[in-house]
Amino acid sequence: MDDRHETGAGCEAGFKIVTREDFSDVTFLLEIEHPLMAKAARPGQFVIVILHDHGERIPLTIADFDRRRGIVTLVIQAVGKSTREIQQTCHVGARLMSVTGPMGEPTDLGDVRKVVLVGGGLGVAPIFPQARAYKENGAYVIGVVGFRTRELVFWEDKFGACCDELIICSDDGSIGIKGLVTDGIAQAIRKHGDIDRLVAIDPPIMMKAAAEATRPHGIETVVSLNPIMVDGTGMCGGCRVKIGDRMKFACVDGPDFDGHEVDFDDLMNRLKRYRTEEKLAFEKWSEACRQKLPDGAIGATGAIGAGGAAGES
Ligand code: FAD
Ligand code: FES
Ligand code: MG
Image 1 (cartoon, rainbow, N blue to C red):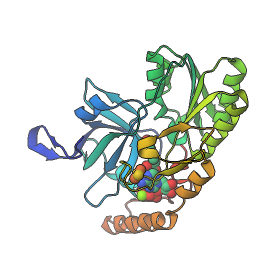
Image 2: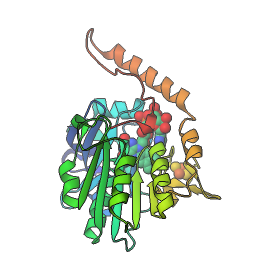
Image 3: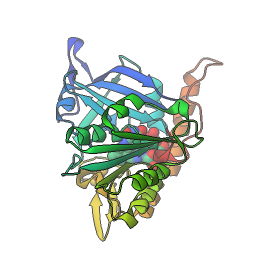
Image 4: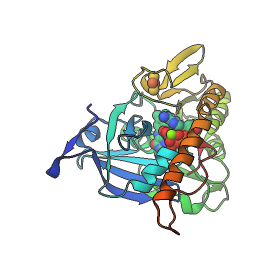
């Protein structure tokens, strides 16, 4: 699908932001007007976004799509230069220069009758379209979502509508069960002896923990991997992941893989490879923002997310 677009009246280039909702200081939702993408999108797929003509390519999961309104939804966590720049500049009426996709293999729903869907950190929103798709396919859906604290919870209503059971986990116990999503997984496994599949979209360390939690029970476990991606079309090799004794490209072979086969340590090491450059890019951009601001105004503040893509919601 083309990634440049002439939109309606005025024929301005780019993709218009029609809704923005901030869930926390770092997590926000954008609804983008993109009828062709909304029509083509399937659960589990992602887009590559470029903010402006000097922007880098960043992969973002299609967190929702509405074919009737011609809208795709992205939920973004501001962790570094590009996501913070989007956070700072993308308000209703602004445009993203390029939104390419849908990319990646759509989720294979199979004939799963009972599924546990686990989302934490960046994964809470991306797990939603899968939860809805499994529900529409007739499965019994158990959602397990993790947040730091009650104030950061979002989409409880949306998950409630498509989950037969919803287990919310919070670090401080202010909502749901006190603990990590792995505690929610343990609760689901204790209660249900007939789970066919568990799907986890989480920071890699949590997906690894989820895979270890299901391994002794022989529950099929699907994880959605988030390695560094550039082109998203299988050309650059940046998103190489080790799955058992095979090498795969997450952008075209995934992003979903068998969690019991993934080499998570390799994935986590590769995600750290450009930390120096990412930090420099953030500092340079912050400095440029500060120079543009009048005295006393607050601009691009805050330290770069230590966890990067593994940050918290
Ligand atoms: P940087 O400071 O440049 O990077 C921070 C950390 O993010 C890095 O250390 C690295 O671990 C990771 N990262 C950096 N560049 C990339 C890249 N090109 N591709 C992947 N990871 C990168 N984030 C969301 O907030 N919402 C989503 O829905 C979402 N979906 C994703 C789906 C896929 C398939 C993948 C691969 C990643 C997804 N991410 C998502 C992660 C998001 O792409 C990164 O957080 C973002 O690129 C960071 O850019 P930055 O310039 O702000 O931060
Ligand atoms: Fe380049 Fe996957 S992002 S090969
Ligand atoms: Mg970056």
